[in-house]
Image (cartoon, rainbow, N blue to C red; front, side):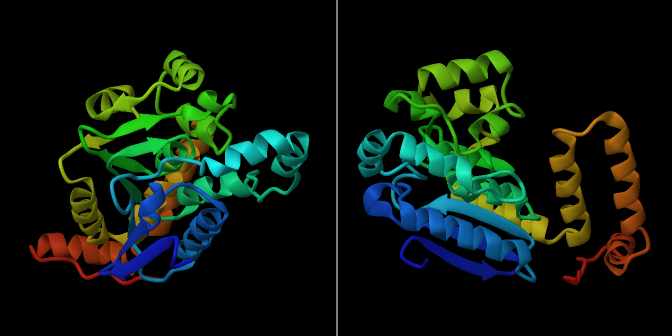
Length: 267
C-alpha cells in the first residue's frame, strides 16, 4: 500500500495521504486496495483518535484513472455484473467500500482538499465527517461527463449534505463547485488557506477529548441519518449510560475541576 497511501500515526492522529501525485491521486486498482486496507486498519488501530485524509501534490483526488473508462465502456455488462456481485455487510461493492469504509472508521475523519476532488474523489471526500477546502478547490460529481452516474456511495452521502434539488443538479450536470460555494451548498465544512494544517490541528484538538465520547458521538451521528426519532432517543440514552462513571468520563470531569489538561486512556 505504501506506493499509493502514506500513513503516519502520531499523538492519536492518523495522517493519511494519497500518494500518487503524478496522476493527481487518481483511483486505480492499487489505490482502491490501499484505501480499503488503510481504512480497515484504522477501524481497529489502538490509540487512533482522529484521522486526516489528504492528497499529496496539487490535488486531493481526480477520480477514477481515465485509463479505466475505456475498459469500462468495452467491458459493458460484464463489468456491471462485477459491480453487483460481492457486497460487504454494509451493502457496498469493492469500489463503494473504498469510500464508505471512511464513514465506518469509528473516529472523526477530516478531509483536507486542495486542487480537485472529482468523481470518485469527490465521493471519497463526502464520506469524511468534515471537509476543509481551499478557496480555489473544485469539487464535482463528474460521472455524467463519462455517461455514468455516481456509484461509489455518492447518493447515500449527498442526501445528508445538500438539498434534494441541488443534489439532482450536481448529479445531472457534473458542474464544478469551488470553495465558498461548496461550503454554502453543504459540500464543504470550512474554507481555509491551509486545509491540511488546519485539519491536523483540529484533529489534535479532538484527540484531547474523551475518546469514548468522541466515538459514541460518531455512532449517534451516523445512526441519525436513517433512524427514526424513537431509535435515536433510545440510543442517546444507551450511549450516555455507557459513558457515565467510566475512567475517561471521570477524568474529563476532574481535569475541568482542577483546570488541567486531561489524560485519557485508549481502551
